[in-house]
Length: 526
View 1 (cartoon, rainbow, N blue to C red):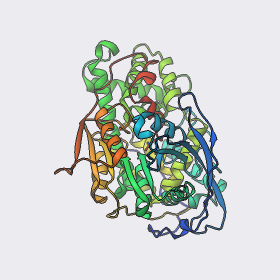
View 2 (cartoon, rainbow, N blue to C red):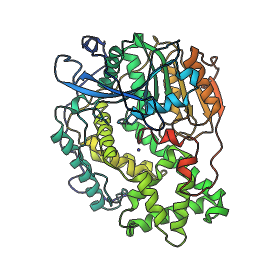
View 3 (spheres, rainbow, N blue to C red):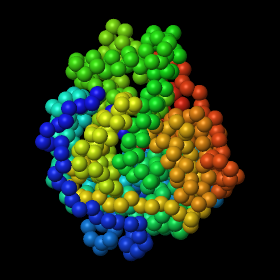
View 4 (tube, helix red, strand yellow):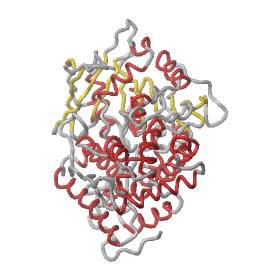
């Protein structure tokens, strides 16, 4: 997935490059059905942790409305079933948009109860343009190279610099991939899933999606309801807010989650020595930000990079001890080495991150309309920033390429659906990346669905992450379709959240905290 600025002269009025929006609705799946999908040829690609993992690829149409035209290649992975009882393929997606799902297949197969996993071919895939699929997009290598301008545009010069970065990224994408960008969308990706289904020889699929993967799964279910056998959506995107409004709500939720982290630091003052008053600890964090704005740590960690480093703490509290150690070391004597290490582990963007961001922007900017008038962005984000300063402007610039995007926009898919078997939804009440309201909305939109809530939880991606209560619901559903009895309120079943982590050393936290394996695989930002 961050003071009122002076009005930026000239460049910040109506943005150039606005195209007429291209209307689109979820339609019948005729195009995908006419494509002759070849059976994948599986080969061993085992890893130390996933010794039975296999890999393959499948061709799909670049444009599903033209199945006889250009083809692109999707990368697949599989952990094959071993039980006599076979329940078909279970496709898994980590979100993003743009997250690679190849390793996730091995993780899911290893994390489910053995008797349940043995009944499925667990199928991972890299969505079109992402990861090992070909062609893979990389619009602007090193777009996130340090040190970037301060995200908070307190001067016209800073605002102009951030705007130019966003405009340049969009223009680079348009120049490099003019034939691909119109087809990097959630709807095209959903049609890809049906090509995968047909290549696997399955009448129906089972699906487990995290984060953005919940929206992809809901869109697939809308397009192909008769092809859905079981549908699990974990940390649910609100499909009524795709995507501009969703990001504004995300900003508020991330600010709350960041303050929860700072309150945790205050509770563990005996370890971190930053005080017992959460407000004073928060002030200390923003003092660190101000200092890094003036003098980036190690010449790499400025204000923008600091925010990037601490965003993962909003996704997963298992990272809190690591982040707190870095915070405390810098606040007490300006020891920047732990902070630089934390940035390298959590904030720095490598080539796969560049690819993931290219897909993220391509999908979100094309999926739905965004304001083309910068004055609207400025007004909305300053209003949110006044109460939620942590991520608002960082997230704004992350998405600003959509104000310049060269392809035009589609209309979001209306995922309301009364033709599905019962779907199973999982949601933490304090999730920042996909706030709770999204799960409630989808619960109402998918007739017969059941919502399992982690009460008091704030992590993003909650099944197969150490909460036995949640995992029992997931296993029962995948084993024989069992869902909780329909509740009278928003939730049909409630599980208590796991306790927050205890302080530990920065080197130990990511490796030993519960759920770290899953959160290392989930797609970035959503």
